[in-house]
Image (tube, rainbow, N blue to C red; front, side, top):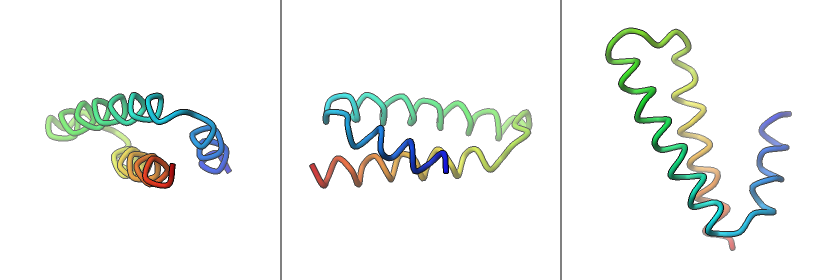
Length: 64
């Protein structure tokens, strides 16, 4: 249910705001990958979730 609310919120934002959101998520993904490589990441599913969020936002940007 949380993802549906996030998608609704993203659809209300402008392209510039969504682009900023993508950059922030890409930075988060980068840090998660470093944590995973060093063995300090507890929840590895978080990487998958961030990647899916990036894809969802890019899909919304394409439809605008």
